Image (tube, rainbow, N blue to C red):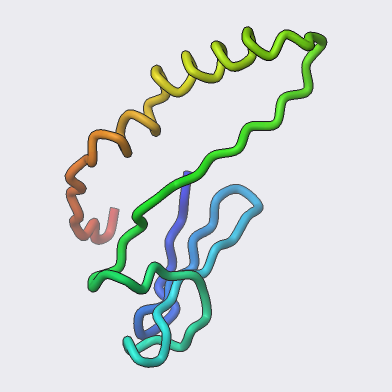
Length: 96
């Protein structure tokens, strides 16, 4: 589960497990440059996502490992969601 907290202006903090990521705009776009941001679009968006997989396995059969990664990517809910450009629904949940 991810938890997003507004930190003022256009800055946000995203917590996932023990990890924290800060997002913010640069000063020209109304932010304090406190975190990462794609600066080519307004509003900002991510345009590319790279995933590197490190494998610690008892095999040296690279072809089998590549096939396993291919199958995992093809059947991954997150990859398929991003690939198909899901339309988000954003709503305020108050007092629940």
